[in-house]
Length: 234
Ligand code: MN
Image 1 (cartoon, rainbow, N blue to C red):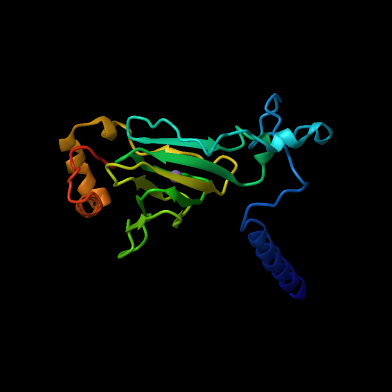
Image 2 (cartoon, rainbow, N blue to C red):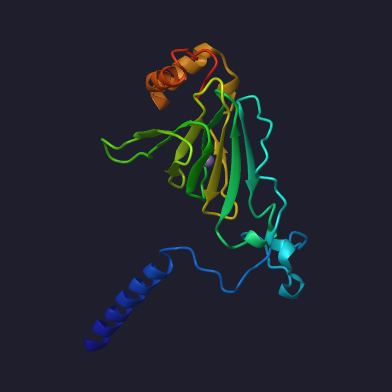
């Protein structure tokens, strides 16, 4: 009887310890693990380059993040610096991006499956937001949004759908985003909706992003000029 109690206690202790062990990602086991992009070995991430061959250039990129970028058809450009650009980021759980927004440009709704994002506005104004997951009511798919000005900071929790929109029809905007992953992952909502008709957007938007509120914000920030036919966040 006493033996079975001891075994039970031991099992309980082991369960407790194993729960603690998987509660978070393990920390690095060495100073760095610069990604060896040429290795044929496939693991979860990249294998380490021989540390004797590592130098400062493995942690560096002349990325010109101070320079404006040409924006795409939805009016944004994300210049991402992750482990694919700086091999030294491998295993370190961090990356960065410069995001340019044309006047009325948007970084359409998307998620990062592996990274929380923290965004700092360097120039201009941004209307940003995210939507919660299917939590119990009243927080089910709750929409959080904010108008950010130069110097403001906003956080997008890992895995949640989020977006940024430049409501100013005359001025571009610039932001720097830090991401808590060497490769944050990107899952975009169906890009088709961005290329669809205005009628499609008007059908889709009110349900998912409270389009009326966005319209009001745009109108207020655009000196009375309405922009509903030129903008779309799906
Ligand atoms: Mn993002």
